[in-house]
Image (cartoon, rainbow, N blue to C red; front, side, top):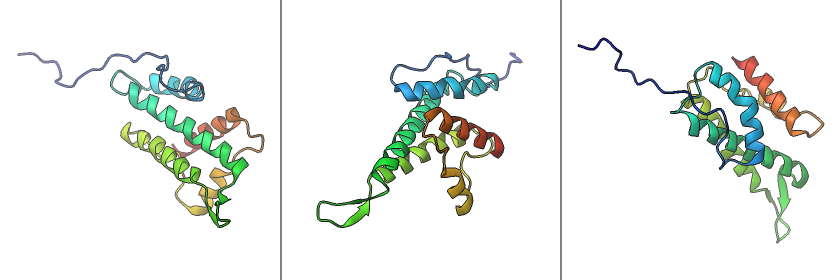
Length: 145
């Protein structure tokens, strides 16, 4: 009888981002995945999930940047004020990103729950630099752990 565990052992994932994610997602991949590799979270089984998280974060950042310019409320062709459709895309991308943390069973969530904490969290660095935003998010995630 074999004494080895029946638990499937997954091999180490490639540390390079997949080709299908965009440039901004690849930049985030480079900053996000080293810790996941060290902790054994990024492996063959989680590779695509982590890639989709990076892509979702890229979409989220694109929306944040565009919403800064366009605004969260826009004027429709009839002159009525309406919510910018990018708000829904932003929310969906963020939810997909957060869902990845849950699926990977990473402790904590990168999003506060109280509304005043949320407001402070979403107030990003004044520079508008994507790297500042990523650094800000990384520090927030660390604080939640």
